[in-house]
Length: 219
Image (tube, rainbow, N blue to C red; front, side, top):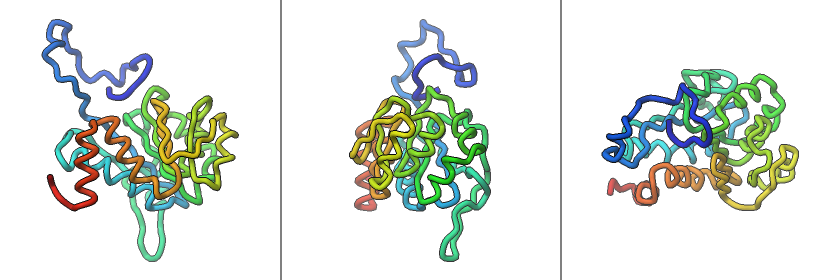
């Protein structure tokens, strides 16, 4: 199971490679399962900005076995505005199914941070796997216990809230603390997505994905 620190739970073991054959195995983690959370009061660009570069890991062939699921925290149709809606097929699935959890932000994040049902669900994401936030999504991760003792960032207007969750606020666009990555305001969403790509798929993948996003080229 990719991208974990600490003991490996049984649900993470997909295959066993005999020690004698280990040297012939590629030094590459594949099949990463991403979950991106939608919720009421979401800022859509927070979600789309981080989703797009991550989704290109599979779309551009860097790891066709990776997958991204957009899941609902509260309902099948959490985001609606101006005649459009974002509809998801799954609401609060078991987060142990995923390797990386991505939580966008938005005006509704503060209220959800006090919702015991949502917080308990987020807290069920295994602590030794990678949690990522954009903007005020960090407040939801904080309420779920993921920020204590860590450096973190969020939207500048909410920076003081991070201390409530035991975090050290940092005025940076992206803060990487190993199994926790937090991003600043909404314009940081693509930065966070590309940072995750770099972490998990390498510099080359991140550079090619960034180039495709900039120039709309398949090179």
